[in-house]
Length: 331
Image 1: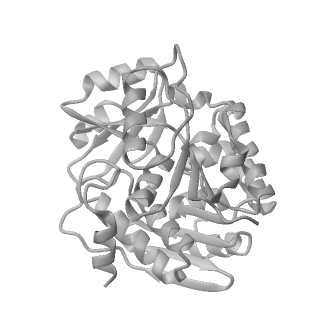
Image 2: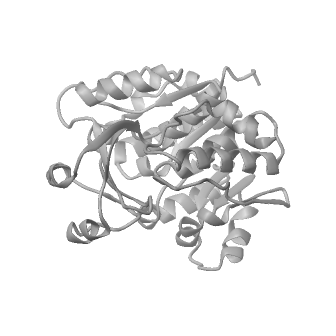
């Protein structure tokens, strides 16, 4: 097996996050699922955007956010996703390349436009996400470069993109390419509603041994396993993947591998501003430690520290020198 040129290559939604503050009352008036994520169409996107107050536009997308964190820590990364030939597509392309991440999938002409996620943030920092997938769900399998996937130590897949048929086929092709090259495959199911739609597929991937590292939160694990018992869910999954990582919000996170179990508390911060991207950056910190050969406990600590940086400000991309931030907090 040749030495990997990249640490992580990811396939995910190429999205611009549009983030605005709102009240709890507005969440109810708009009929939104507080703290959750739902898919919306173009008309709903326009309606919600009109209802939003002053907003910030920041490049996002779950897997892309994870790569941004990895790159900030010093990892070499590549991204595979689809934007349209429009202004938001140009913004996304600029931002991800400026972060030092390789991205060479050509923009798609015509409609639909580049994806956007309208995020309403309540005073407690909770985010309610409403995603219009746009061009991102039209990523065809022929856009994949199997040789480039084989150059990465880890292929990271975002569950959000499993929903549309075209990118689902692309991700299956990528899994085969990574497996043929002897690389590791990491997967996050992304959200409970995605699991509800594709639970059979996800469980099949796990049962087949196609997933080496599985990232989920406690609610996603409950939906995936069908049990509300945290320990029972851990027991059902931990012997089917090489590494299982389960986050528990303010209660920290747990990871298991080869019978070893490690736990970490959430990092203390002065104030939670916006939880958007907390799971994405947790995955970034953990994966960085993993590809650098760190212990399970150290990987968890790095994930927790990265998540704490993200929830201390708006947006899902690091705003400080993340490598220095992690090094200082790791002690």
